Image 1 (cartoon, helix red, strand yellow):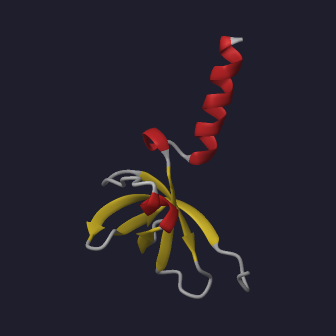
Image 2 (cartoon, helix red, strand yellow):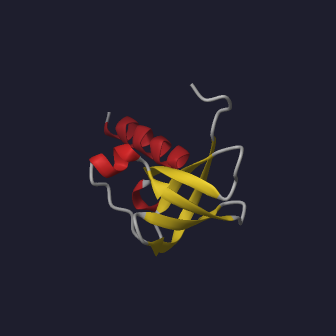
Length: 92
């Protein structure tokens, strides 16, 4: 159990680095180095330049992070869940 919870932010991948590391520009303008989480590696989830991702930052070092989620179609995570629920309501 971590001493402090991780900070989750959204951003866009701007550069691909060796060993599944990426430079991610966060919504607040900061650029962080991030690596892919183990679960994403396990399921072979590919991350490309321009993808919108969710990054967990440690409170101890805000320049490093872990990519935990790749959003579909470049939309934010909160808006994509709303779009899916609206689509289900439209079909009914």
